[in-house]
Length: 152
Image 1: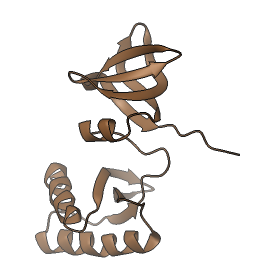
Image 2: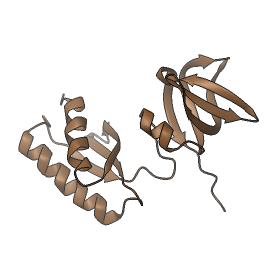
Image 3: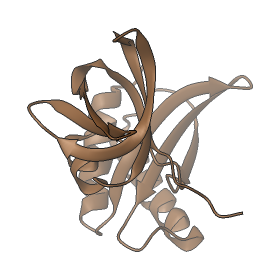
Image 4: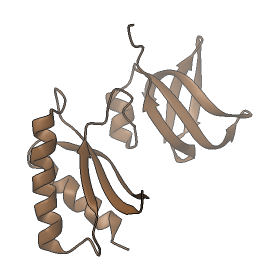
């Protein structure tokens, strides 16, 4: 099994040199093959050309360092409109945006919350929902995503 933490750190540093942000990384098996998937963003958004350029750069780095221990398929994508929020800086950056949060364990009998992110306070997310503010411990968050109101 490859050292995923080392791969993520190496790729994150390489992308930062070109003003890209590594939003998320997934390593999973689909259809009998291993897939290493990177979700990348930058100010103003990511284009298809950006994804191709990043794929070539990351592929070269992984090949040169022999970090991958077996064959795999490399995929690079934008994080999409429902971008995942993982790091403290994500929760600060997207303050004021509508989000969906799923917790590892229930808080007040619930695992799923939706509302407007009001930032962070003492290792917890502040979420405004229906006029009240809920504090959710960051360590309890299983997944948090932007939940944009899309115009139809």
